[in-house]
Image 1 (cartoon, rainbow, N blue to C red):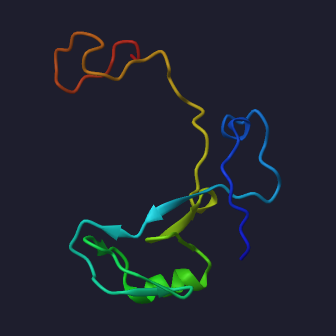
Image 2: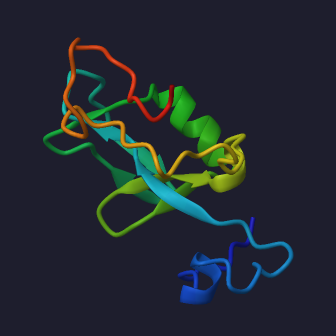
Image 3: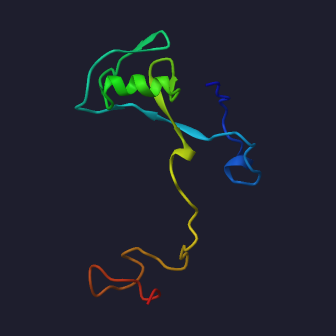
Length: 120
């Protein structure tokens, strides 16, 4: 898969202008974790990667599978998972009550768990 990799423009990030058709925003996710996990060397595109002081959070066969699916991004010292925005079924909030504060300090409470008076 040939990816054109670039940073989104400010206008694209703020939705002032729509994304060009075919572009897929993504982020890179760490494949390691503090531990415990698995320790092994992983070969990808002719380079061997190690989790270093951390642990792989994914089994080796799964790393190979996402590599074959073109979902790995090689950097100089590590390899990352390509996480596309389209991987998640999300939708915009359409019932957001901006005028209701949901903090414990917004009004005096009688009970620890108490709905804000404005909601009622």
